[in-house]
Image (cartoon, rainbow, N blue to C red; front, side, top):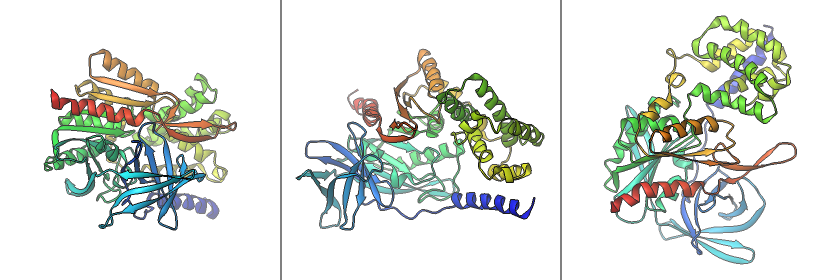
Length: 457
């Protein structure tokens, strides 16, 4: 390897390290909560980033962007990040410095946005030797209340700062609890995606909530997103849970989930079984290298790379939500030709890191856990999910339901991962417009039926 090639490899590795260790500054959340317009329209507000807030309308999943302005007010636009402002507002404070309402100026008339009197309580709790940061949001009244614990997806940002679900739930009579997964936000420890470890943190949160006299721990529920779809059933297998909802999660093992990223991309671009078979061959060899540490497979991978790297299907899967998509994006990068094959070996080893044998996640069979549960569950699936295989998941859920297990599901047609809806322009570029219309109501109404109705039974 010459000096220039070594420099390129070093830049790539150092850039990835910098991205992995990038710190984020604290986010202002004093305005976070549930609000209500004079006509009864319910919304939640929380931070989107340090420049804007996100408001979500409960009845139809419509998001709005509230940009902070120099006068400590905000300018309002529709959508996730538009700056086409149509309204402006200012928060109103009481004598204690707490927000009680907001004035909303739109089309030459003014509306008021009243903040609901929810209670937000910070709770630090122990999971093993680590201290994790959580926040409990309580409805108005004395309780004790049923509680819904939100479970992270694979993201590494703070749930306490950004998740708005507890406000929607508390506005409807159900307490909501969120916490920063280990190694994120205000929680100690090292970030991990190990399912048993993360399930253990949720169980630790449940044990901590047992100490709250405002919580009816017998009515504990889970709300898991994406990766949380694997973790929530693991929790329900160990602890008595009233019910759980999975948002855009899956029933299939992680290798099958990863495969869907490139399969979906190929299908959407008109490719068929022939190209999928070639991609599968590629993926099988990568799996041997990454998970089985089979060094003898490197020659096979390099041979496949040289045979297919110029073909259209290979460029199509580059950047898809899969390990193969990441590898393809690296191999089709303009600088890839100057990096020798052993350079990719070094890169892959750095990304893989050391593990102590096969990982739990890679071998875990989620369907076996689901078949052992009699806990009511609702799965809210994105019809056009490019990250998780909705068709395979629905097939499994239908089988479980046919066996008499208390499983139900909803498919939001046209929605992508996150249950967000989008439009596509002539060039194929997407603009995400809103959440699936009934998504938020489906979550709240299910938990109300599972919990609040039990008071009269």
